[in-house]
Image (tube, rainbow over all chains, first blue to last red; front, side, top):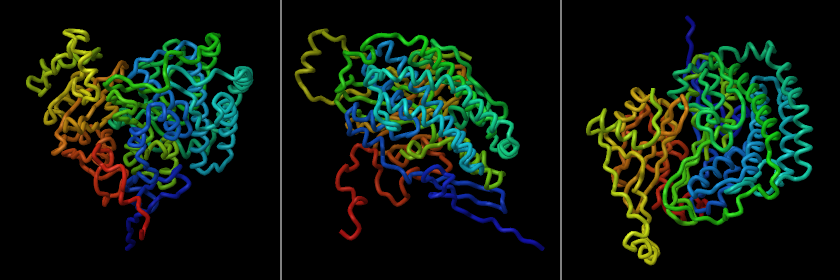
Length: 369
Length: 185
């Protein structure tokens, strides 16, 4: 009689498919996954405590390091929280500049997320190269406005640090003229691809009710069929002025998460188009001149959240009236989106786990903080 | 399903539907600035302990938290638990936990705060019914040492199990960390 035995295997911490240093202790019965325990903390640096001994402004570049793919979005959430705490107003032009940067961030994040997910599925490097190509063009734009490609540190309380470089708008328009073709090309390559369909359809299914009870957010929540987008649900900044749709998935599998990301890139493109059209031409309107970089907000607390490309990114700040935040808490979407990992992986093959993890789109700098 | 607009509305709901649910009375409002010339006097004193405990948010007794959370979800429809933040108010000798709920139809947050003494930080866990609270609570246990009663798997989230102390507490030594000394020195 044949006897089978369950095996315990560590995936990670230094496995290429874990997108960083992250370990999953999986129990497998043959190829089928029976149990999964995630382990965090390999990149833990107690971000929140370090932030508590920095001044408010010193934390701005530090938020870049949370999710290093989306430094502009991190800046935005943190700036909103401090502005709420200290009651700082943002001029019109600065709001538009912020929206342009954050939507560009969303496109670059989703393009590379799709590329990395396909990488995890075994389509080694080719789809990723297509995704990275878009990303490079956007990073060039970020370098132009902020001087840095990834650690942008572009936002300030009450606006952004400097106005656009004169070459920025022409170059952005040039990029936007080819972007729909880029996205269509990526989609032509992948959406009907037989290997993608086999690997992604009905894998890692996260039903609607489960998604809510697990507090997942962002594209993962929408792929499960819940049209919840903070830009619509609780509009911040100037998102109520734009016309865009919230794509939702049907069953909540890996394929739906892919489709939602592709559609969100198109919707971000629509927002960008409208933002460029409406962008006010106010000289020096990129920052509120009354906003001081060294500020002492009144005693109290504030929470601000944005729809970051990965999900709900929130900052909870408590001020004791001094230069330093008394409490600085990050609600990191990558970490919370990992909560249902065990449940959505159970019963699938080991190779599917890698694809499911890729479809969640995590960045360990944000998970471990 | 109603979408509440303010913390007062939530307090009214709780007082009506969960009688004695442990909604703490709000502290008296701070005196109007300028009234009786109190404000300048305070400023002249200089460094004074900031008053963190005056809040417009709903503060609930820890033992009734599960009940209140279920009421928010089942009756008011706030089914999305977004965040649990722990704050260490060392000078007031308590931990405050900030629970943040959202309605999936949109709208602002509903905040429920819980205060527990620093000496015995025990809060009922929401993980059995809200699995999304799992990592938030493990983080609170890891970095602040809060015990979430009823949590199925209360382990440290980031640090290793043998680590001593809880580094986000305000009285955790910021210098002289024994884990930072070089091996053999």
